[in-house]
Length: 177
Image 1 (cartoon, rainbow, N blue to C red):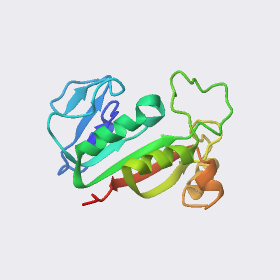
Image 2: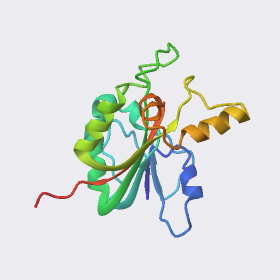
Image 3: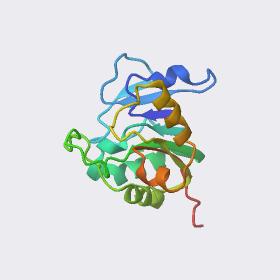
């Protein structure tokens, strides 16, 4: 498993012991042979000559703006034939909020545009909203968290179009040969 934009590599502590975890991030907090410091936006995403069964990119693509599609290509090259690409995308496009710093979140585009571009590189097997919080923060009250969990299941129109965060599970497109 390759965790692209791994931050403090927390996912590595959560996966089963039989999973070989590797992580890449611009700021690795503790050196380890399975972690690599790399500015993902300005360098090719790779970990030596390894390929992976699973590539994860959580909270990454809202920062990649103009290089998004190049990074999709790089991730394609990292995946094994039957591999999975699991990613999240924060949809700030429909949130009219001055708190959103567009110099940091430089990939603010409508969800359907992001999904269409993702589908140009991968087969989207499943996608679903993972947060509906209009204030771009996590819910604080327990009753609100309970409501939020119910919304995360699937409300076809509202949920898919108006959520803030989305989760995608993708695979490589079949070769045309």
